[in-house]
Length: 390
Image (cartoon, rainbow, N blue to C red; front, side, top):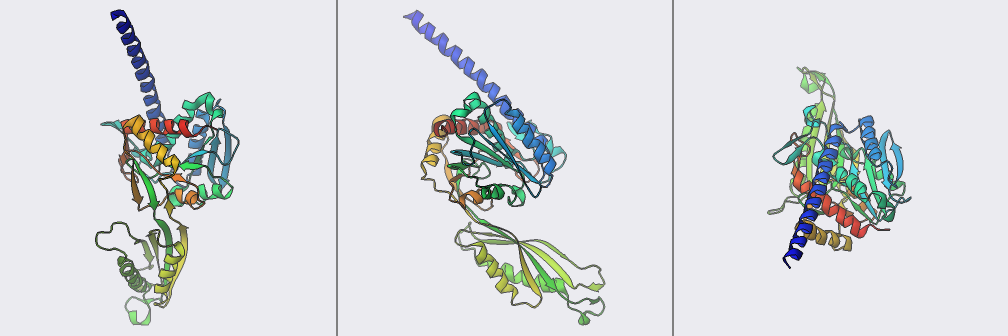
């Protein structure tokens, strides 16, 4: 009996040792791949850098049974990698390669206190690296699954030549997974719509010492913007932290200090809750503009809201697997920002927006928690294996 127990102990020890070794290898590969992606300076509009980074991902999957399709819209590259020859896989893992600008140092990843730090680490190369490693883990068995990986290069400026373009080409999925929000293991149940406007004020120029002979466009614009801000301030109610907002992003006007400016321009960023539409917001601003002489409004970017039904069986499956694999309780949240998820949900395609722990996205010192990043990969891999077979 002692020999039997001793034998069982040895087998268990060897299995644990083997598992820990394999997991350590996986951990190293996850950190290596994310670090490599961070080093690519894929700032939005640097289409060559984004293409090179996408090519690296494709090269990492060389030899595996995948189909690769490249696209380009207004010089913005995109690539879709699928395990089956289809534009509508059961599971589509989607991510944007582009990042906001950062210092040179921010593109040199480093590890500190269990965190991997670098531009794009959290937003959203962590999701891309995890997805890449899922494809690697499925390996030669990929042909037994119906999964895809979509990479685009313009999310930070609206996604119109990336995901929107690809959806217009017919791309979709049984469900899309996009780790570009839903931070700290919370399903993003809804996200605000976005409307960017350019507001122009026309005046009349004159010498700065004879203001009565001119009409100051900057002052006219300023008065309008104050009225606009006061109007949207009524959206906030006591105890409500999820409401429609307006932000004055930039103001330009004037050519010389001693000249009354005849032209001024401002950009306006409106984030609206699901009870409104983009048309509602535009009409609201135009109505205010009509109260002023010489004020015009032009739409620059428009995008609807994102919704998610967490009672969907695939969401329920993810919750169960997160608990079983990592002991994580998945929650729910609402997003104040926008993402490419809105293009999928706008077509009634279930879209799961969720990510692990990290911070400082769009800022210096952007980071992901390495241990949690591993957990996210393990959970997502288990979920894909459970739900992605063809």
